Image 1 (cartoon, one colour):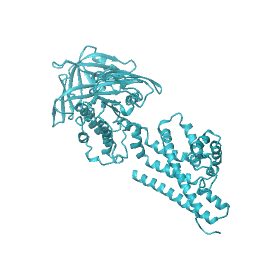
Image 2 (cartoon, chains in turn cyan, brown; image 1 turned 60 degrees about the vertical axis):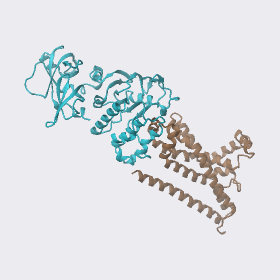
Image 3 (tube, helix red, strand yellow; image 1 turned 180 degrees about the horizontal axis):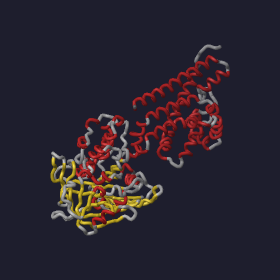
Image 4 (cartoon, each protein chain N blue to C red; image 1 turned 90 degrees about the vertical axis):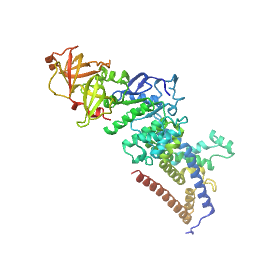
Length: 371
Length: 230
């Protein structure tokens, strides 16, 4: 069982200086997000014990485990899955799954059994097959099961799903969330896909050029300025969290409760009372100072402008809008809208002003939550 | 022309040749395998240097190697003295002198096929195994060896055949002593010198057929494993 994990890494990696320090969550899914070449994989390699030339501190439950002589990779308490996971070609799927089990002296059968994993990841029909005859998605599922079967204290997954199609990816992300909750295995998930992180993350660590920029809860990070700067204007977006109220089966539409206001999204993203996250692009939002009384969109939300960023050399302004607080929920969520400065001036919108927000359900990406 | 016959001295030469080839392969497995592993996975800066040394016997004339070995094996050198201390015999013109020379001469034939086969496995496979709880040794036995079976087979067959076929160095270092260091290649040479073409035919033909069968086995097994992967 893991109670605390502190990591500090400093040193040169290629041509940049890595400076990373973090007290990790010991439950939930932490996403390490950053552009390519920002040092994400290096951090995973250091934790797994494959890089030892950097100045490192890894303290797990008050015990230092950074020394690769005393704690070589095979004695580390991490279950690592690298980019492009590798199965042992000379072993059947079943033998691959047994590989970590045979090598774990303190295996806890009650924690999570091989049979359970085979069931959840639907590996039953391929146990006697060899890796050469598996598809990419099947290989990944086997590799994931094998890594989990090591029963490590912490799972480290280094962009394992970058090559998968959306449907398979969505299923596996869902599976990871389930594994994380059900078996209480904390996960560090490396990714540079916003869709992925907005769905599975409980905590996000943002890194760029080897430096940690910011870390915190999903809503805090995804709506932060540093994150928006990192992903660029085109991808600028906000993530709203809502409780699923009901699904209209006939129309195939679902109503969410977001801060006491309703948001209608296409499809069926979950069951009643589930918490659903929806990502909305800033440029898909229409803002108006007055209520528009025609049904131009499915969704009308109310909020207050808390900040306006007018860009100097472009035609655009970015509005940070706080949704009106609900009576029950005290915390209010943030929405970002991107409109032209021309229209901003025409509408005479200023900070601290109440605005109506119109979002077409069509613009809500189904892939953003359907998994 | 004399008749085809097989003298006891030829029989001895065949035995010595087989014994030499097997012993050499045994030591090559012990020395060449870690070297190939090191070259494939560990070395970065030292790699070009080490590879050059391992490949040297491939490009040097056998006489050059033979000459230096005679120099190093002579009873005046530390190595020569040590061997006399150990066995009471001179290293030069002895069977173990031949073995030592063959190890050096055949080293590239063991290291190179194995190294390229190991490199195909790649570092990521090793990392995967270690991160799943297997030590380096465990990984070597249970992942690397099974995955590079073909490499080991190729290394063994080529080194074996190559050791059987060497001539220049064994003549210089071993001296072609009857029943001791006289291998098939030298016997053939002697027969030809004495114009006993029949005896030469017998041994040469045997070598030809054996070498062909060895290579056929090798290429056949390579082809078969390629088909299997497809």
